[in-house]
Image (cartoon, rainbow, N blue to C red; front, top):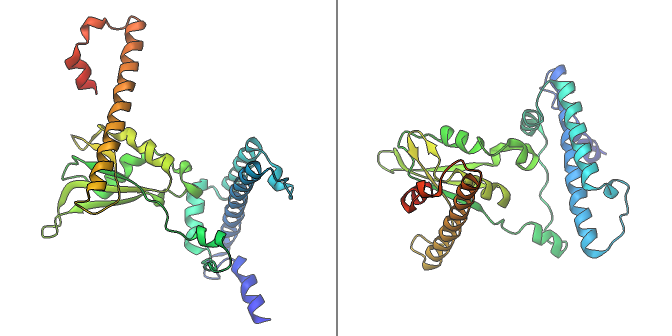
Length: 262
């Protein structure tokens, strides 16, 4: 059957690759499939816990520690066989992997839910230097966001839109950064008030809605208050630990100094 043969060939490396790269493709595919299976098993495990369902396959009985061990082992084997880091190998594999067919969304509600529009996790970056480029801003974010923390180790999921003047095409000193998970979004907020290209930048949660939406403004104000409160409590905790350890005297730190730290 021609259709069956064509389907089987999806697992084969592209013929345009050299013999060495074809071997690399097979290793990369094995790593990709293993990580995908481990992630799927973790999701099944969570669903079973919530519904008190008994696992039906040996793989799905792995606990979190065993999955982490299996993941590290698979990555180590792939690195040893190719000389590439897992991140580099998976990024390379994506260039040649066959495109997956779209899911049939009319089968059941579960498929329909999978295809709903994803919630964007976006932060607004302000006070940027006009000299800051997309690459330097990306590097700044990746200085605290490990590629390993991205889904499938794919740091390209970090998407940046640098706002520019429509006439001059020069930077307006602002950007929106979209991240694939809420964990990465909250981690990126640690860059708030850090220095980049000689400027102390603002990094805040963004919100949906129109440009002049009152709901959007209300959400942003709430986000700012929560972020400011978190920073204030964190700074107070750090100062208290310094005072407790005798590294600074409390009278050295008046309200002005505390405010500057915050």
